[in-house]
Length: 515
Image (cartoon, rainbow, N blue to C red; front, side, top):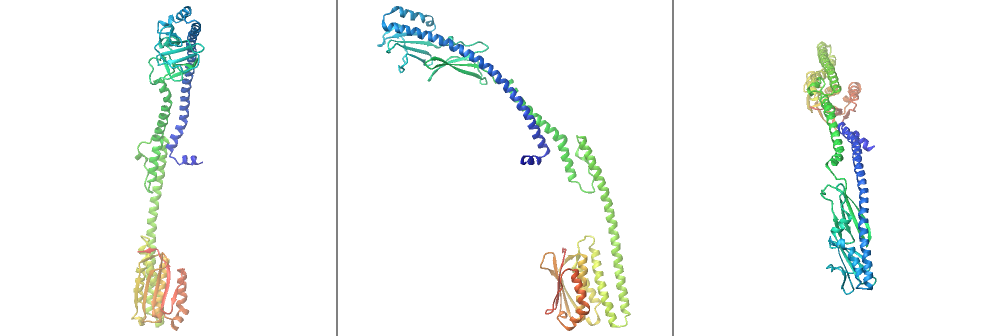
């Protein structure tokens, strides 16, 4: 499965090239095999002719040499009994008379080296063999045969020159020239050669034993040469394989894969709202690719129309939301004005204080709503520094007459929160400040918002001496403020901590970030 998985991850062009290469390579190998088989058949015919010619040449030279050796044996045997046997010497001279015209020489000597018959030979070879018949190659100049009588004397030697031996084996015909050579254990004697043999020509060689003391005849014949037509026939399938695979890959890559790649890049760079124009890619060669490009163009136009409709809908929705926020803001201002109007006509101080308390909470909601409307364009969240700063100003403005020396110190980091958190924090700040004013109108209040112990969380801390444990504080918490503050803490999903020793309220809440 691993090769299949690796192949599936390759580009289409590579897959096509590999597939074509494998398919066409099989055909190329079949063609090469057929060419080599034709060459082998031709070589088989050449080897058959070579065996016939080699056997005929070996038979000719073996018959000639065997006859001459037998003649020498007869002469040696006769001269051993009578060294002055002239008829036996004459018969031996008659045997070699015709061969003497081309350089064949023989001699028969006794144990002391005295010439008994023939001509003196200046050739010296060591007598290191015990065989009565010894055949050796003589210094690449010919062949020397030694025949010894029983007991080692007399000894007959005959030297056959290369020209005589070459005439015996023959040189073949013009259509089938032969290369021949006599070889023994240590030397070789070339008799005939193949004329005009080039470096790329091949030869077939066979060795035939002559049955004369290990002497062999090596015969060579020209085989089918490695010619230009043979090389072309051998290499042409490979060239055709490479050309067909490369040309097929080039055509498919240019006509199919490359246009698809360009079209894919155009689609990948598509941005909603634009229209894909395949015409910018140049002429697309395939009808199917052109139709695919037209399909992408139609789809992109449809998407562009939908995008335009969505953009118009967003604009209308934004306008409608702005109008709703504007009306809510106006309604909160109207409610605040009505509460202020009724507060001025209240029959008692308690009623006036109640109206002021209600107005502070309406103002807290209005501040959050106003800041949310201002931040709505970027949807970044509400800045608590602005919200709490405006709340503090409104609370100072609506403070009762007994709280004229009220001082609210702010230390608020610019954290961003969503509207729900902002409403809960604004009401909680309002409730705690009003609780402090009610307990101790001259108390100093410090409101701080700092980073919390966890990421994306902040901590609200309201500190005042009015929050130190007292009967007044306990009564107000149990009858009025405690339940409201506990409900706001549940809205923030975090417990509200009260430290009665230091006079502080503390609560953690989630934030969106910092401005």
